Image 1 (cartoon, rainbow, N blue to C red):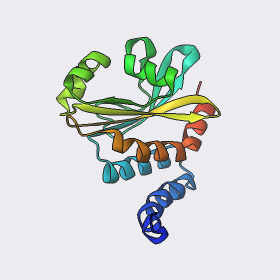
Image 2: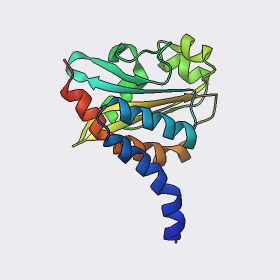
Image 3: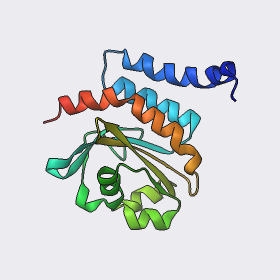
Length: 172
């Protein structure tokens, strides 16, 4: 059994970072900035994005990007042109891509991704009331992400559900 004090010392600072961000007025941006920093420090990434699904329109909207110079917020992506994103939306199951071959196969913008030095990807669905609202995307060097990263990224993605709900509420 894990010592409660050890568990609290490790997990409470992570959780409180996000809960404090959720209390800020600048939503959903404050929450996504906090999640970006938290995941950079705990899991690592070269690129972090948050996407909101618009399933009836067949697209996803980029709500946040750690690299707005390359992937600006408010950019959109058609679900039909992004096989990995479509799988996450329809299945609600995270996607792990381990190398450039996976990225070339599943991402239409693979040239830009690989040019950033990214060879692995973790796409985590954000779910609410049985529906996938969107996803958190983390990209890093090849073979960086593995199954051991899934629980922490899933927990952090679920904590920020309110940010996705706010974005969905204000979506056109």
